Image 1 (cartoon, one colour):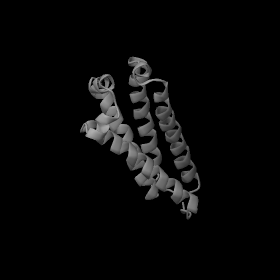
Image 2: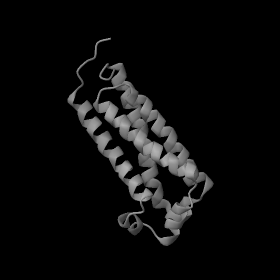
Image 3: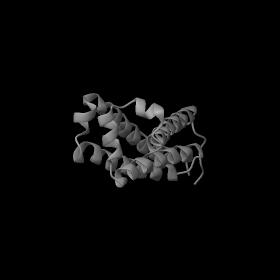
Length: 142
């Protein structure tokens, strides 16, 4: 199977995917190390809720962001395993969202505006799963 040269849009989408997922990695690292800029974004009640999260939820967060980041790297490297990393990342996102929205009532603590970012994360993740599959069909990634 011969690989085809991707269009310029492929590289733009891959770069955006890398930047988006790098922001996720940054968010995870800030939370893991409890940086001052991280703490400044939340109330004491919200920080307490974050601190009380079970290890499996925190692990899901880490797997989601690092899976997405390495999926974006694989996309840039034109590797088809990007698709599988994006699927893996989405599963981890859904596990984390299950904790945040089903097990705890994060809406009560963070407010209705807190649904915007999770929706964006899910939509962007689904787009990357679809796009990586599309790139496989076009033989842009092998």
